[in-house]
Image (cartoon, rainbow, N blue to C red; front, side):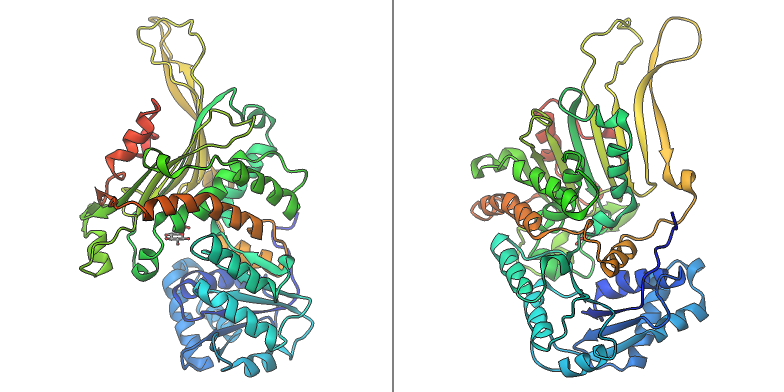
Length: 492
Ligand code: BG6
């Protein structure tokens, strides 16, 4: 199969073109696709934002962003210049009529080609921008709209946004991004499960004791304190990224890789999640907030300081919770999820913990029998490790030791891993929605998370403090310990 699927020339209009996401992620992703020859000659990237900029001044900004966010080895000045020539800037206001005629005139030069409207703005603007796109007649049969997460901040606002966007774009034209689905290793979960019979046959309650999903970050809230404080880890990470990972792990085999076949199965998982009643929330969920500490040997300040307000905030920067999937396959197999900022390591990892042996024939002394464990490292150092018991070599009795079968993807494939946005942007151009969230998925995820949010807002508890650089509040260890289990210790 060719490594690069060629596409016809396209137009990509990026709203929020001066924002962090565009400069940090979208432009570098488009640049890499350009370098790889996946952006045909006259494709155009039309940057749209409210600032008063010219094509030239926007190109300067873009070049600066590329220098900051693209690996030095991939920065060729001539290529950066040629890439920037594809960029133009239009001053457009998503909430008024300013700039829309100009945008319309530019787009109408190429009415037949694929037209991507990328909404890298805050979600409150998704409705108004879509309405303008519709009113100014910019939607063609070849148009698509891309919506960044979060789609709203609860179920009602997500529905409202989906309704507003749905008045202008069909579901097939709507691409709701969860960038975790664009990560190579996340897609590898499909390969692991459905291209290897040894795993899929051992993927159920008969053999699996529990599953852990950890997405840990060392960063704090960076320059996003305003957004983050109104969101928190549950909305920012669990409602989307962690639940999407859970879906890929827990779903039944889809009948094909077609977008709806995969998304139907993921939806079933979301709908089978056991609701957590408000009175149980305290026992099944732990929220934390970082205080000052040290990460990577550097002292860092606490969340309240990062926020820069004197008012105490109840927003959680860490959350751990116990989820259950109510199906025949997963009965009695808890899924423990945790994510947080200012943890000791940046690591995303899934641990499939198999059940203990029903009986041991080995001598008790000198043998620490450990159940098998499959560890899937999503980032960094992407790979997999299957932990098994083996005989320690040498005479002197039969001693067993845990060893691992390791696959390092970098060593196996020796290639740069494309950033999630590179794949997702090209999937959008190609019109492939498999790795995007369907409306009912997003809403089902909110429906599950919402009682947790409500339980929290009706209590007066504060998030539990944890020192930056630790693995979160000790209550998270206690939560899993109550079930006789521990978090994957090698992370600690
Ligand atoms: C984003 C969240 O969706 O994902 C951020 O809004 C978080 O808060 C980021 O830092 C993590 O993504 P990645 O790809 O660095 O794991």
